[in-house]
Amino acid sequence: MIDRYSRPDMVNIWSDQTKFRIWYEIEAFACEAQAKIGVIPKATVKSIWSLKDHIFDSEKINLIEKTTKHDVIAFLTYLANFIGDDSRFIHQGMTSSDILDTCFNIQLVRASDILIKDIDELLEALKAKAFEHKETVCVGRSHGIHAEPITFGLKMAQAYAEMDRNKTRLIDAKKEIAVGAISGAVGTYANIEPDVETYVCKALGLESETISTQIIPRDRHAMFFATLGVIGSSIDRIATEIRHLQRTEVLEVEEFFAKGQKGSSAMPHKRNPVLTENLSGLSRLVRMSVIPAMENVSLWHERDISHSSVERNIAPDTTITLDFALNRLTGVIKNLVIYPENMNKNLNKFNGLIHSQRVLLALTQKGVRREDAYEIVQSNAMKVWNEGVDFYNQLKKDPRVVKALNDNELRANFDMSYHLKHVDTIFGKVFS
Image 1 (spheres, rainbow, N blue to C red):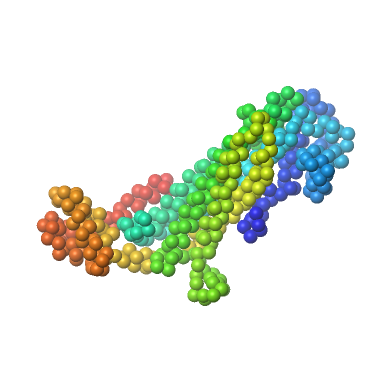
Image 2: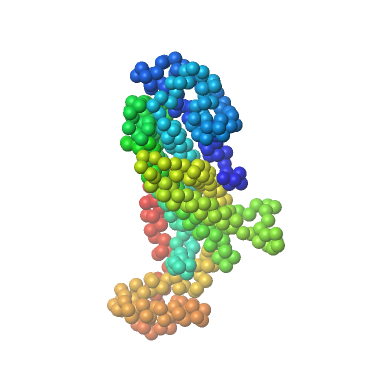
């Protein structure tokens, strides 16, 4: 991922130095386990742990790989240069996938921890904004058209609930990939005892894979990246809502526009929703990993490496991108500028039409057939649409309405607070 959309902690997880450190720890713990059961000399354990503070030279390892054409062998060759004769006992009964897959899952677990923290910070921002604007009334829209009143706090509460579900999904996805496998060629443990796997995984904070072939099954990873894709879609939905609400014709909210910031190279007046547009784009990159991860599930027999090139790309790119996007969205929400006066202006733009359902229901309660009540209300509403008249005044002139409802009964249907009577109930459900 390019530096522009990267944050250092997540980038570090995917560095060569981190990868080689994890490979080293897997090999060292495996030596410990094998020494305990007498497969290798205990002195080997001391030899390999002598490198616990070693800074691995990525350039030298990569240079060896140019000859070996095999990354794990290149790494083992590099270790042998420091450990000497005891190096012959390292990697006993193991296969490359034991190292690669276990390391990969450790990296994904660490990435998950960062992403969960990111979501927690976003949840805090959404909750604060929800309570701040719990009673800030605005118009709800369906199909992009005015519907009935809601509050801006409800919009933020909905986003909170969605992201809270995503946090639960991510915790489950983390558990799904928090497994390791040290089962040897084709996963039979023929040349390495299952207890070694148990020991290594426990030392590294993983569970042992239930059954591996020569690899950890990729349905686990498909689940993980699908979850990241869902989170990306949620980011996109929230960003798109903000973008719509910032349109000039609406202008109910706006991204914070800093002093000295420029919106357009040509038009000095412009204040564009560049951050949320960026988030919609980044979300596409996150979702882009889902299909390749799904296709990685189907591999040949006990192992092939068609998944390898895919994962080398999508794992760092997707987690780095999502980390950046979650952090950016948190900043957008924290600094979002709200315009209650514009919300009120838009709410009343069509002269009371937002109360049409209440009038419809009031007529039915007075004995008017629903089909007739709908026609009465709609015919008057269309005059408001076409002529710009006031809905309440228009209804007062309709003898069919007057016959069913007196003026006080009609006026009662235009009470804004009616639509907000259950806001506390909804907040209680969301933030309980």
